[in-house]
Image 1 (spheres, rainbow, N blue to C red):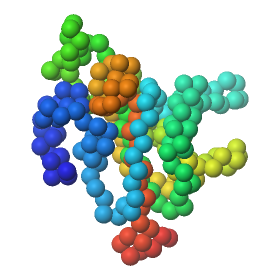
Image 2: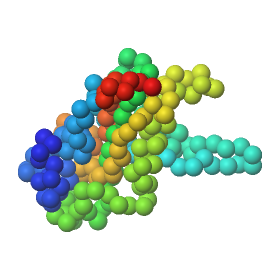
Image 3: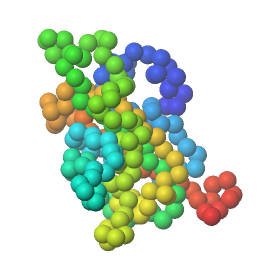
Length: 206
């Protein structure tokens, strides 16, 4: 799959369609993220819903608090991942790759509802937040919080994340009508969590 990446990026994309085939979340992640020799295990999670990028805490006098929409999105991500990952948080280094799949604006579609041939695949919209802030929001959501007594979902501290990537793409269609169709990229987030071999390179875990 890695050898196909240059060809894939050079081709025009309509939605998440490649050579007439509807891409699934796993396909998309494999095309955007190259394989790594030092990974011992990788798990994929797909959470539907409107992705909310990380933002600085809001302030009310001397009190700082998380934006309600951001908090609700992070809680949803944490809940959905915890349902699928039952092994508890890892202790060593890990990687986190996040693909925010955003809802397309109406202008990407023809009057008949078909996607325009010129509709982009990657999103450069300011309204949807930066790719690295989508990554940070997910990283924060999945770590533990000692003062609240909350154990991490995948890891206890995001300092364990030694690498990864953030991407912004457009989902197929407008989102809601895709639910239950059994194919394509829904509006939401695709997360790949990878456990890193701490002894890779012969330098140990220190």
